[in-house]
Amino acid sequence: MTAAVRAKASRADRLRLVGQPVAVLLLVGGVLLWAATRDLDSIEKVNLAPPKIVRDTWDHLVISVVVTALVVVVAVPLGIAVTRRWARWAAPIVLGVATVGQAAPSVGVLVLFFLWTEWEGLWAAVLPIALYSLLPVLRNTVVGIRGVDPALVEAGRGIGMSAGAVLRRIELPLAVPLILAGLRTSLVLAVGTATLAAFVNGGGLGLLIDTGYKLNRSTVLITGAVLAVGLALLVDWLGALAERSLGPKGLR
Image 1 (cartoon, rainbow, N blue to C red):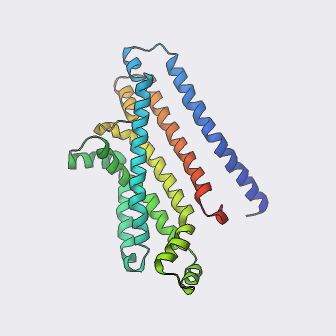
Image 2 (image 1 turned 180 degrees about the vertical axis):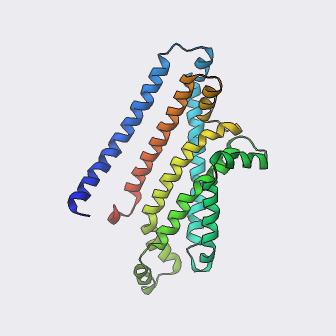
Image 3 (image 1 turned 90 degrees about the vertical axis):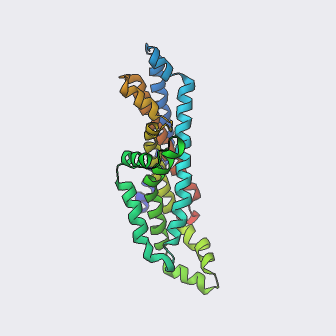
């Protein structure tokens, strides 16, 4: 890649980082203003009341954050484990299970989990959504660690580092960009899939979408859908910022 191409890509990246939150604010603000200035009936007024919108948005955000935390806690250590010599045989099995979890329709995973456990509420939504969002972080952790130059690993061992020190000081720092990219994808998946939490009484913006669809209230439906899209775009932007700020300085 030439210097001119790199400079052009860098300018485009900076422009997107500035433009994306502005676009989200304009989109969400415009739809909320449009909904507030319409002649609403009693059902629409109840569902589009500011306290309810704030509550549904907060519930949606909580689901997404809990799913992401669960994915990180499970996927990163599991990805590290299957790159170790003693567990490399398990990598295809673990990745295969995670692939099945994401390949299945998200609503199917949610419904099957509900039928199996008969749970409702936050955890009835969080656990199947976490399974659905697991693959990007798990796969990128494995690929990132495996992609570290073996010469660097051998050099670390040559100066007396233990296996744990090599992992902490060489392999993980160099794998961070790929892990963060996977986390960014998982975040967006979690935000989008969290709309299905309404089907198991988990709350979130899916309530607005479902209510608008069932009661034929397009204003409620559009508002819920746009808020979910705006939240996904905002999370994607935050993920891009994390990739730029948390990766190794020499690779930024």
